[in-house]
Image (cartoon, one colour):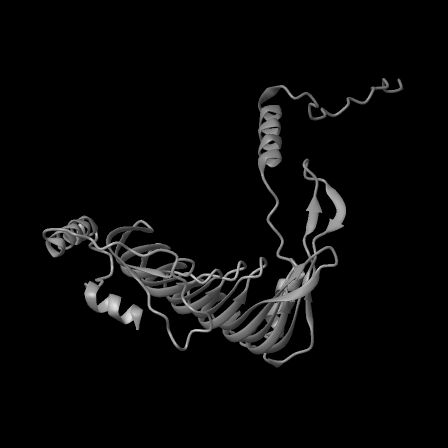
Length: 311
């Protein structure tokens, strides 16, 4: 019997490794899609733990780690920003009550909180100098992280303001002591002197009257300490426009006598009152143009004002 002929095994067809063909095209398209897809952003673990904590009541100091500092190309530098810390009361996982917060920029706040923001009475310190020592910047009321209510602010140049604040600006009644010794007491609007106020300068000069956008505007009187004279009249854009000059008389309660450097000559006009009233009327007419949002400054009696300054 003849032996069967040896048959070589036929290799099974293997899938093509070529990128050509229909299957190869699908693979390349899928790879392109995968390359353009971004991995879902993973929530930091501390967010999950923070929700579980639901901080409420008095707590010890809680620290926040500063963010990593990245290079221009986005690579990590190994450095981190300064962190923050808070020690105080919580309610509903928010800062509520009394607490002390140290911010990443080195500032420190100590006072009342509500809904995670500074609300109520509190004090803010800021670092200064090379040693970064803390100095007191503001003491007073807060609302939604802004200065609001009565408060005192100590500026870096030596000035300080004591009075009313609204939305972080000086607004209402207030006193500002300037670094050169000048003192303003009066009304404020959006951080500027507006309304009625008195400015007493370090050299003894004194202005009492109305202001608008940090400039003298409207009726006002100015006492010149060096000459002892008084101007009473109308002001426009911080300059006197129309009024009268008189020589102030000595005041018994004044520490130093009023100097009299010159003698004002008698003005001989045919109709002095008409001339003065005409000038005042012209100035007031100019002030009315576009002044729908300005305050209504009452007109003054020049004669009565002059007598009052002299007395």
